[in-house]
Length: 345
Image 1 (cartoon, rainbow, N blue to C red):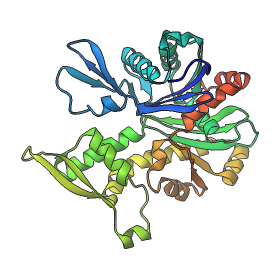
Image 2: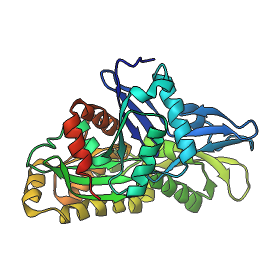
Image 3: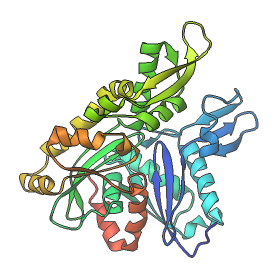
């Protein structure tokens, strides 16, 4: 538990995971953005990891909800309830939340209505001050990129619900592309592949486990020589209706994800095409930084480099970059207010 001596909080309210950063403590929570509700008793029974473990397994009276879809709030009430429960895990008195300043990361492509919905969730809990920060800006700050300089820098944040690609200079986003196409779409592609090629129905959790274990965007000569990694995919056989397990290889997951990843590549190219020539020269020199869980797909950095001719790097803190960026941005309120005012409309 943390007291209220630290009154600044950064929140990466993601489709897949919610991360909470407390100033002076760093990231204190990283849990799935999932909530489970007992509909008969009308009470919350689990959030985060415990709720995620119930996906696809809960009885009829327990509803397991992912209240954010494609980077935006799809269920306001459940988002607020989930966030309150998660904050209660790290703060000693959530009822005294009114003393806290909060920065929330949102995708760069959200509408003004969606921004207000995100802000309203936190204001509804009584936060003293709320700032909205676009996720690529937060990711750039969290990755340590020089966002204050006239030299342009480029970041691609590939999360669960959205992929946000932006070129940043002089504390503002020069050009950006936001795709509601990211980790969740990768899971869907794996589910579709297993159904089509193996007549096996697998759940969302199994698809995610496959993606994390052997997700692949690039196959090289070494893979061909040493053999491909594999994973036992379990589900229900369409024909017999019985449980079945098939061994799926890294090469097959590569095939399953090829079309989905091509959408991300197109987004990177579009962002580069829209950049002013002077900034393009900066990107040629310094390359692209990848953040988010999707950045950890094997070979994605190599594929983007091959497709663009640029150097591509995965941030060492790829999973936490947005959360760390939202939190550390509170160290300079004047600069944070400029970031917020410079958000693309």
